[in-house]
Amino acid sequence: MDNLVRLPEHGADPGLTLPGGTRPKEYPMTTVPIAKTPIQQRRILATTIPGPRSKLLHERKVSAVSAAVGTGLPVYIERAGGGILVDVDGNHLIDFGSGIAVTTVGNSAPRVVAGVQSQVEDFTHTCFMVTPYEEYVEVCERLNALTPGAGEKRSALFNSGAEAVENAIKVARTFTGRPAVIAFDHAYHGRTNLTMALTAKNMPYKQGFGPFASEIYRVPMAYPYRWPTGPDRCADEAFAQFVSFVHTQVGEQNTAAVIIEPIQGEGGFIVPPPGYLRRVAHWCAENGILFIADEIQTGFCRTGDWFACEHEDVVPDLITTAKGIAGGLPLAAVTGRGDVMDSVHGGGLGGTYGGNPVACAAALGAIETMQADDLCGRAREIESLFMPRLRELAEKFDVIGDIRGRGAMLALELVAGDGDSTPNAALTSAVNAHCHSQGLVTLTAGTFGNVLRFLPPLSSGDDLLHEGLDIVAQAFVASS
Ligand SMILES: Cc1ncc(COP(=O)(O)O)c(C=O)c1O
Image (cartoon, rainbow, N blue to C red; front, top):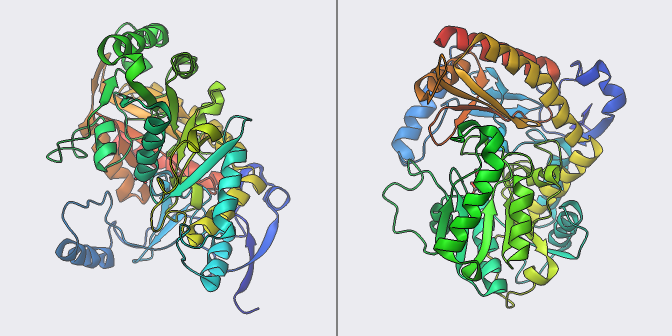
């Protein structure tokens, strides 16, 4: 019993007041084995950021790690949970990044930890393609049940988002017998050769890495804020351009799939106008083209629904997931129509580690947490907490050109201001750096590097979120 600690399911400080101040009722206590004491859910600046121990570690990093692998904020993390990252200097940083939308259930979430610990003791690997195990099957069952659409579905598991996307394309080409794939401006689908071709932005993702995979075509994205004739005409005109482009430059009969992020992630949290996704999906169905929703960043409660395309009542033929699926362990999936997924020859999909049992155990713990703690509801609460504060900020600072996103996936697009919507990457970097210096981990995004994005863990308490937003507000004052 020594290492059994009663702690809230959020892994937060038992004294912390969470949404509505009624956490004991809303978030029942649970007993889980944990190795370390719970993490105080408050910001603590013990040193300047980064502190001396982080600086020493960073010197080692520079000597040992390829310079091509960057770090946004070189503070070295020792522990994390709730909404806090604890660094090696004892600083408690507020996390508005979730390791890029991964730790949706919080870091070291109790059910994830319990599942991983138990699985590691049982066995760590057999390779599902050699001798299978129940955890893989169970994750696929859960995915088939949770993803949109009532029909029969199948899933296959992989290690990373890029690998899931690659495999979704393999499936789509096999099923349709067609080569072409349509992707969008501002898209991000990964860094492998095929997914680099699907990704829009050159620096840093593609520069010098070509030649890229063929038969990938790019169409304009329905980007309301930057639509030339204004946001009201965006849905109709973007859809017309999309249809015309595919018809005239690719040919519907040559097109296997259209792949789209229901809310674009790295491209700048671009939310297509209402109805746009539905029209694209419907048009795909009419033309025998598969509609692939890349929900790698948007999936698993992040946007206030299990999957962002539910907001538009869109049922994709294939859906790619990763990131939030397993509470921080590497796991990814392709889920889709049974006839489509089963069209590939036996042995055509797989990989040594895909659906590793430890990652599967983590996913089952993460999914259980999302269901038991209603994390979709929590994401919507976070949106309600953030939005008025972001609007207040935009009233004060005209360099905030757009506020967008859904649930706990929200962003500010920064511009020159005074009616000029020229992207303002310099200000975005300055605001981001100021937040970092004050112990708030924020991320930037966007094709033009001018989007400040917020992806807090859904285990963050309201107090922390408000404190983080106070820091963002101060950052605008300090940087303007
Ligand atoms: C929408 C989307 N697709 C694919 C990927 C690639 O995932 P991974 O980095 O796990 O390969 C990402 C990663 O940010 C993403 O946001």
